[in-house]
Length: 257
Image 1 (cartoon, rainbow, N blue to C red):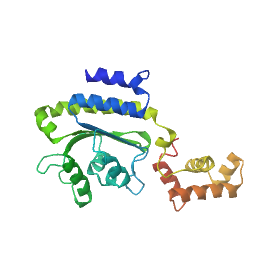
Image 2: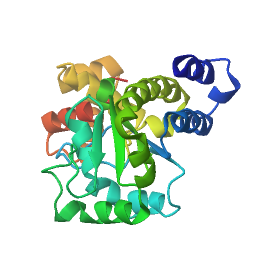
Image 3: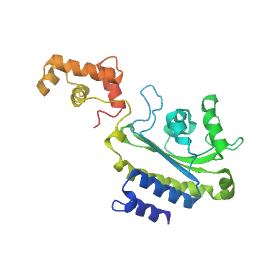
């Protein structure tokens, strides 16, 4: 039943598939049928910096969570402190997590002082359990969709939780496949990384192994102009030299465009 409803909600000509917000509304409605109390979804064109620090996603959507959760996660950096996000990056399988002390979950052994504000907030709000589906995509794109339970709901579901997870995983993949096609160019661009068309062109040719002289000939520009474009690109990407600039551009998915 859920399969057909999800396909109907996210079909190309369906009324509910015309915007990111509509897709999340539909997802929340279907997740509620499975017994979830809230849903979150986030998408990042690139999940981490080359140094491994989590980048705040370009798309963050919450449904039926406390009003201040978005501000805390996006504006005050709790996204970077969230151990669920760190776990999601490490694998592709959905996983159950719980902040309730003594309850077995994927969070056992990974909670620390750095993640304490996340644990405290969710416990205080009474939404201590959930299931997260990691959604890894080509070009370092990364998303997660999470279904959350309130404590009393989780106790009521009991042994049927396993079946909810299977169907929620299907829902997450169907929703993500649809919603990614609705993102704007801004949402698909890595945060804080912006090269000019000429800088990107020069860097892409350098990544193919062309020398400065060959790039200049190919683009009908002087060698000094090409060098300036490459130096500017390296500076914007935080690379100390051409090789590092190419590596960082590849990490951010810029060379795959």
